[in-house]
Length: 469
Image 1: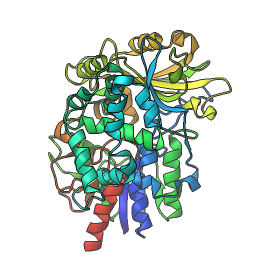
Image 2 (image 1 turned 180 degrees about the horizontal axis):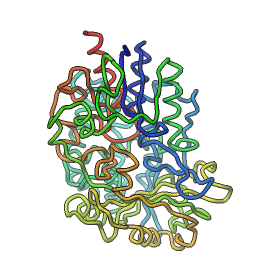
Image 3 (image 1 turned 90 degrees about the horizontal axis):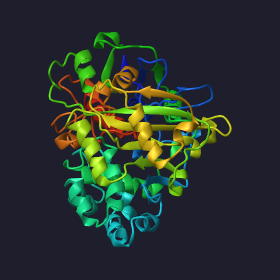
Image 4 (image 1 turned 90 degrees about the vertical axis):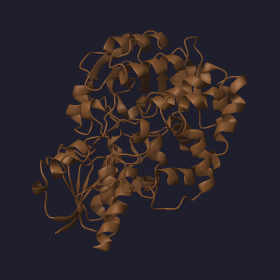
């Protein structure tokens, strides 16, 4: 009998497997697709030689992850590559606000009225970022905070809606960039705890940047897999699980799946019936004949570019997708240009680029024209550089990754109490009514992102259960 079986070879499932294998347990991972990766994959979606990341591409939480930083993943081929600027937010006049590794450079891009305000906002947290990151990404209610005063101060700033926090800024340049950071959670800006979302992304960028993985996001999953195998773990692909009986006997089963799939496979009935899935995205991957012709020079050297432009535009786009059930006429776009940092992603002189806008869950329309019209506003001539494009709306995203129910790439709405208490209100969020079944996907704390911490935390819960038995 195995000690542990993990279902799903995404970053969280692989991290959980590694953590338990490091403790000497026998572990096997079962993945329905023909390759590992989950939300961290790399594929030739458009033309030969153009390597795209179908989901996640830039990894501010990955490079800052306490779990990943405790593993020797560099020995297994993981290398982080940085652009000159982690992120830029261009405006129609050709200027841009930036998220730089330098707090001073970031603050200066907001203008004189808000520079000092921004410095005062991040100053208490950045020197203590590593302890703070461990505290709010750790297993809930099981460890004492390393720095309780800083964590409490962060909570006072971050728990209110981001719209409250942004009242500190006088001009819209700072509000627009911060709104864009919050929008990475695909949640309305006025929700509980959204201030913390924006602060986390800002602090992560200042601390270690917003890098890509050399060769693509697949490198993260491949490094975790290689490390797991060296620890004695096994990985089985092309192995779809429909019920627990499809798996070999084990002392514990960990699911890197949606709560819906877990309930169906493990026979948990309506246990997760109140779990809410959120809005989706419409994603386009491009093969380009040259770099994106951004008007703002800062955007040309940034790894991630937010295309808004203003805080009200961003709020309206999110509200349309999340609350009104329609695609926005002028979508807010999150874009990543990996080949700015990693020329190996495309043939010489060519580039890969992706962009997504927010749409309602399950939406089956085509946002391509709206996305490209928005890009042309800030990068005139963009369409002339397109060699090929691959589109994926909610149905395609859900077909590509079963965890993306309705196309929800966050595996559960990141809003309301579910921002903090997921997949349901529980003192032990990784356990289920079945004593041998656990969940470790992005539906569990600390939530979405390629950071492995949900798997890390779930592995601790499993380890305690096994050790006590």
